[in-house]
Structure formats: C-alpha cells, structure tokens
Length: 492
Image (cartoon, rainbow, N blue to C red; front, side):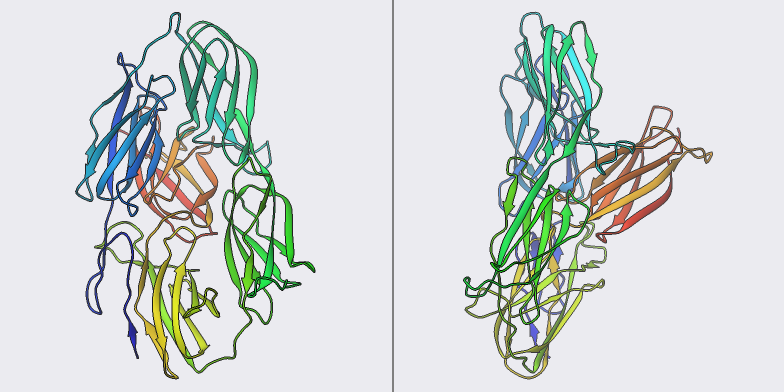
C-alpha cells in the first residue's frame, strides 16, 4: 500500500515521516492580579491575550473580586500582547509577555490601571446575571459570563460579569440609575429607576433569555444555478442550542426555519444522486434576526471507480505529548478532484477515529479533514491504481467549538454528607472551550445542560471550612449526557 505523507499545519513542533514522533506544543498557565491606582482591586477587569503569530492561542477572561485572573492551562509558548481594561480606569494598560516553557505557571507582574476618582464617589452596585437555558423558569438558571453591564445615571459606568455571572460597579454618585445587561445571542435585560445611595446596593439577578432567529439558505447543483428540489436539510447545534432541526428545499432550492434559538449550527444538505455537503452557520449575532447561509452546491455523484482509501484522525486531548492521542470521531473527510472546488465523495470518522471509502475514481485529490472545534487540514492523494490507499494518521488541533454535552454530579464531604451551595467550576484545557460555573443544591447535586465537549479541570470550592479540590474529567464525546457521580471536596 502506498503511504501519503502528512503535511501538518500550525501548532506542530515537528512532522515525522513513518516511524518518527509527531509533537504538539503543550500548554502553560498565566495568572496575575490587577488593581486600580490607589490599591483597590480591579474587580471584573477584562484581560485579553493576543498571540504574536496566527498559530498562537488567543484568550479572554475576567478578574475575580480580588482582581486575580488566570488562563488555566490554555496558553501555548510564544510572545503575547496582554491588554488590561476596566470600566473605571482612565485608560487600558497593554504589555508584552513571553511564554517560553510549557507545563509551567507564569506569574504576570501586578498591573495598575490609571484611575482618577470623581468628587462624591463611593456607592457600589453588585449583582449577578443568569440565563434561562431551557425556557422553564422553575428550573435552575445558569450563570452567564461576559455580559456587558451598563449603568446610566448621575455616573455612567460599565462592567462585565465574571465566570460566576457576578459583577460589581464601584465609584457611583448617589442618584437613580437604569441598569442594563447585554450579550450577543441574548435579549437584553434591565432594571429601571434603581435608587443608589449609601455604600452598597445588591441587585436581584438579571435574567437574560436566549434570542430567537430565522435562518435559511439555497441549495443548487454544482453549476450554482440549477436549484435542487426536495433536498433534506439537517441543522445540528454546535453551541448555544440543543435540538436538531430539519427542513426541505422548495422549488427554488430554498429552505428555512423560523424562530430557532440563536447559536452555531452544522447545516447538512443531502439528496439521492448528489454528494452530501455540510456548512457552518453562525446564528449567534443578536442584531441580525434573519441569517441566510452561503449557497450550498451539491455535485452529482460520479460513476464509481475501483480504488479505495482509509486512514485515522487523532487529537492531543490533554496538551501532553507523552500521553496517548485519542481517536477523533465525526471528522469530515472530503475528496476534492484536482482543479475542482467541490468534493465528489465524503466520509466521516467513527468513534475510533477511523475512516474509509470505496468506489474512488482514479485521479489526484485534495483531502480536507475538518470538524467544528478543530483547525482544518489538507493532504494530497494521487490515485493511480485499483487498490486501497492508506493515508498517514492525521492530527487535528483544537481551534473553536465542538458539540455540546450535558453534565451532572454530586458534591459530598469526607463524611458522605451533601455539600450545599458548593461552587463547581469547569475549566477547559483548550482555548476553544468556555469556563462554566454552577452551584450544588440542597442534595449536593449540580447540573450544566450544555457544555463544549472536551477535557476539563473541575474545581470544587466553598468556604474556608473546605479546601479547594480538583478533578480532571473526560467529556470528549459530543452530544452525550455525563453523570460524574459523587465528587468529594476535601476539608483541612
């Protein structure tokens, strides 16, 4: 059998021929503290890391109530620009920082943001933002990070919610304020005419409801003109929504679905006699109520050939090149003829990461391997004989989002007693994930209905009567419901 050499793209330290080791740059951690001039913690300050190269790992997060921030193990070695922002600061602060070594925690020097207090300042407004994840107000709401909080009144202030959905706005003049919470993909929430006087005002939760959008698109033959009637359309949620939806193209090749949850979707178009195609649909922007996908072109199925091809797709699931790589399922493998732009054949990897095709015509192909949440790779395959070609194993690198999973579990103390109101933090080991936070109920139970599939570090945190406890969990199979069972939080 003929081996086809893999030409890997970004984030690979080395590419080996058969028998050589392939390494991926592992990750490091950055952490630090931010304060306002005068020494007050810069609570909920926004921290943005921008890599010097396109291959680096971007990251954005928020400081906690003490002004502390951390990336978790998500930063790959290279030079970064780090921007620190706070709504009360006179201006942001930007620094450059070199991450040289993996598997290391870097302590970024204390950053002080310029701050000029106004006369009479001193009041504070605090609160939380949550979202109604399932449309049922009787069930627990989910903390919502990154919500823009705006206060309009005698002082004008803004802030962002942190990973627990919390915010604080300091230095307010006494008076009456309108308070707004806004985030893309969600309808804004507000409290009007809030009286602010004295040292602190605690707000009831701002509840944001996920926006609804209309979506649609056209399906044509590969000439880009002839509509395909009766093509089956499947919308599979990638993030932000939960239900798989279906539609059918009309006489103009048009399909539509109205009033669906804002989110990211995979849109699959298929009809007998044509090659199935899948495109991405970003329907998260709350300012656009109707989202039309790019035209989907379906080439006709070609006469079968006598060749075949097979291969494997894996990924570095934990950032450690010393551990085994994991087979990656549901990766789309497209065979695009030389000089063409559309595939004549498509395969998907199974749960082990394996894929195969038969009936492949002779010719030179570009194989594209892509999956939502990973960087697309391309390799070449020259089919010249009636045989099965084995393609070298391909490593995909995480880059965006993957299919959602739901997670449940319980938190007990060492005496097997449920721990109530314990904070449970899921921190992704890759930059495409989202930190999710929830709290246990009176039975010690917690639930998060929608998370990005991947590997996470779970932190259990409560009062000083307990010690923060950490677990690494495997949630890599998208679309699954995970019950983590009982997690034990340690005591001093």
